[in-house]
Length: 165
Picture 1 (cartoon, rainbow, N blue to C red):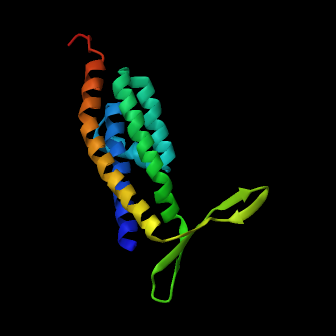
Picture 2: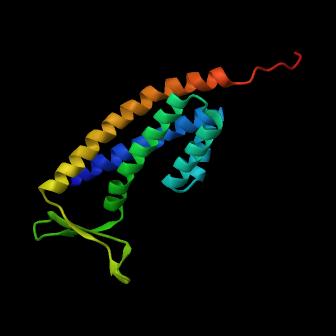
């Protein structure tokens, strides 16, 4: 189970970091500057919001914009599971096997507060993790293959410098 959780976190982190390159292209800047902007925004949601807002301002091609929206949406769906596993308390049995997780989050149901949902770490949960890891692999490949299309679109839209030399 720990290996699955580790693989999920590894895959999620790699995919989130690819958005630095999306920012680099949208901001028409270098990798270091894009990484500074990325790191300055302290939540994933803020980073993705910036990507989406810049895309609305700079990406005119509907197909390219739609593809970016789809990539952001796929990544966002995967973020919930990653957050659940990074922000929980793990219950282990006498042998050290993880049996349950409990979210470290207050939830309101029917006007009453309760402390975090408890979920078992059973075969269904292992299958959910394995599927999420598979999706992260596909998302990673799709993000890498999207970058050249985004770059080509943005290069075609750059204003021509008409100032005298």
